[in-house]
Image (cartoon, rainbow, N blue to C red; front, side):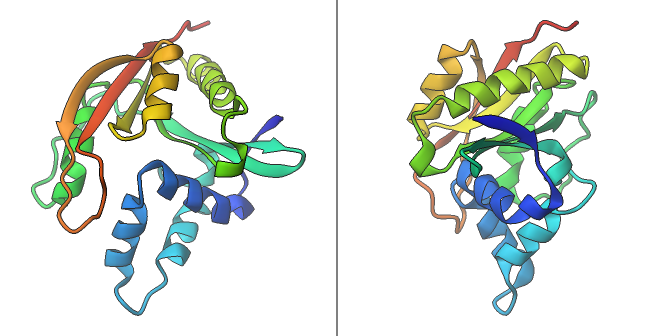
Length: 193
């Protein structure tokens, strides 16, 4: 296994991992954005291939097994002083923003996902260790992440790797079809320096 920085050309993989990590919420949002005539995957790829923005390839690392992309880590610095949630924020995203605001200044691990064929091979653990290295090198003393209550394998991994539950918020579904009922914020201290 090799972990490497993502490239703009990895956008097709990145959008699949981003969507997988949040149970089709990104695809749901992209569909609403482009409308019935648009291509939601193309919008996602365009965002992933950008040089800036939270979901830019510049914030992502890929694990490869025998030259094949197998898993993804995407994260970035959380705001030190989170802004108030705008009144026009789609309700689906409000619980996530509320939880993110509870870990200001942390290194926010937004996506950790593995293609099904590569699960159970330690890639998630390796990427979590890589996240700690990245966070510490950037001067963050905490990593934060938000997971859904239905992602049992991921929840077990986070707890096993020292993450601690901080808070929960109900999932707002509207017309998004998902089994999850709660978002869970986890944090873990990181040794800086």
